[in-house]
Length: 235
Image (cartoon, rainbow, N blue to C red; front, side):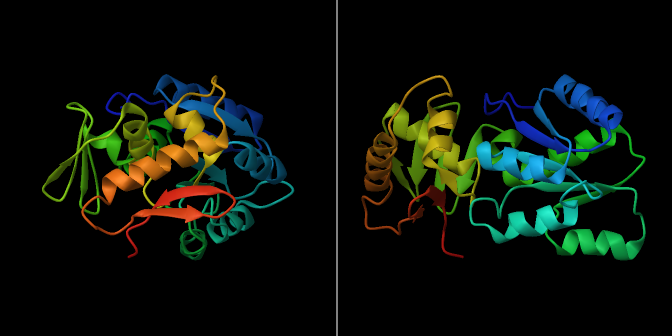
């Protein structure tokens, strides 16, 4: 399912039961995802700080820091407030499900569950948060990016973008609303094995803004001082 964007979706699984974690890792990798495992709450937060995943599968009853507290912390931080989260728990009571969703989980699964159902839930959440997965056309506000034709329009105007600006725009449009650090943009738009200075990202963002705003339209690229950028239509 990742072929539309030609990207590998990264998933962090926060699960303290080794056997369960390995089953999840095996099945998710077989479905085409890149998977990392965190065995406790502290490690989960550390791994997210080091490399933001595309989605977090989060066990409620983690050692050190609970899944509920992790979810609360992630939703209160600018860089992670839009990170898709699926909560896993043995607690099936309605009050517990409501609590999990109220702290910000995008979906909630009660153990035991089948790996196939979890993958279906992951795909559903990703379709909402990563539009590129549902086809070859990305849309945000009045911007349309055609991945197959390599064309970008804003309103009824065709835009002229260089290849790097196109990749950066695609990276941002695949993650609408999410704040990406300069290093994350480098890894996603250039690749993780290249050396690019942070200021190079700023230069290309400036060019991208100039192309997007050439007719006096609103600036939808939000700068988060000292961190990075996000697409934001102001709604």
